[in-house]
Length: 98
Image (cartoon, rainbow, N blue to C red):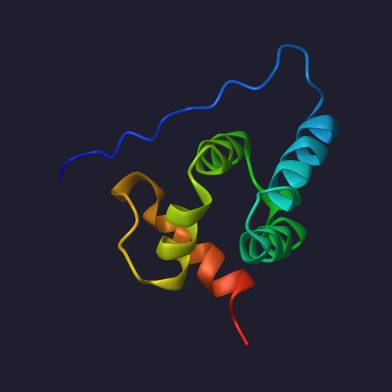
C-alpha cells in the first residue's frame, strides 16, 4: 500500500496557535467565490479548533487551491486529488449537509 504524501504548510515563524486559527478562518471567509466562503466558514466553525497541527497543515494547503477547483471537488463534479480527498469528504459531510 502506497503512503499518501500530503504537502505540509509552513505557518509563519513564532505564530501562536490562536493566531493561526484566526488567520485560517479569515482566509476561509475571503475566498472570492461566495459559495466557497460559506462552505469553508461553516467547516472552520465546526472543525478548525479540533484539528491537530498536521490537519491544520493539510487545511492550509487546501486553502492554496483555486476556488473553482475546490467547489468542483466539494460538489462532487470532479474527484479531488488523493492527498486532499479525506479532508474534502469531511468538508462535504460537515459544511454541505442539509
